Length: 309
Image 1: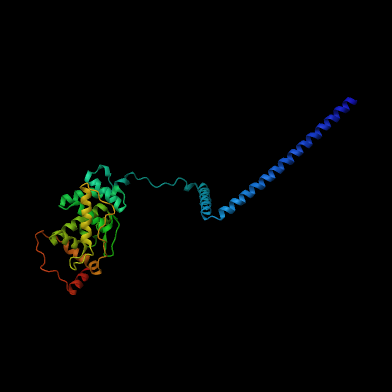
Image 2: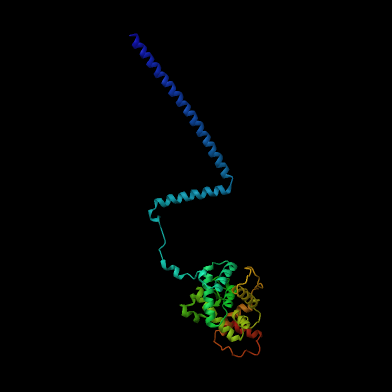
């Protein structure tokens, strides 16, 4: 009996010891966890206070939160998942662009220089340089002159529009020369770079033929044939053409090479530009005689303005 009693006592002691051990371990783990959570909470509060005091941190958190919310919303709306535009493999055919490396040396040099000078992509400029060379040789105009006019008129912005109604790369008066755009589908082709270039060259050629010389033709082109005041336009075009010729000849020309600052054309010049170009649009032989004198009376100016109306 005593042996059994001893065993029972020993077992009871072991059980009590195990209970005490487990209770102490549990209490210790609770304290550690409690302290850890408290420490983590303090860290979170500290980070929140730090982030709240910095605008960039708040912005970053807001962006992440917004992104997470949008992702959750999209996950709930299957119709919005993987929404992609309609594929259009032929879209590249509408792009006015060419590989600069595929151009002849002269044209490639001019295209790269214009790209850097006017901060436009080299591919579309390469296509315009290519077209200027082809059209210029066909009609007997220096390609660098065509490119210089585009540079001065629009800085190679195909969507440029002036208060007088000139549009596109070469700032052609679309309403005056609407007939010239019929071959390209209508006047909206004024904003197609290649179509605008071709029509602009046609208008320029007619202006030079009517005026009997390059500088006078440029004044006709800009609408300053009557007043004679072109705001420095002719000088700027010729200076830019000089830069382009040097580049084409392989010489180094700084991309920030100065031209005479182009001052705004006088109000009278802007007002009569469309009327003058309308006259220039009538084909005239190169040998056509020039007027003995340029009329300057106010009545003539009023007549030109009335023609616009």
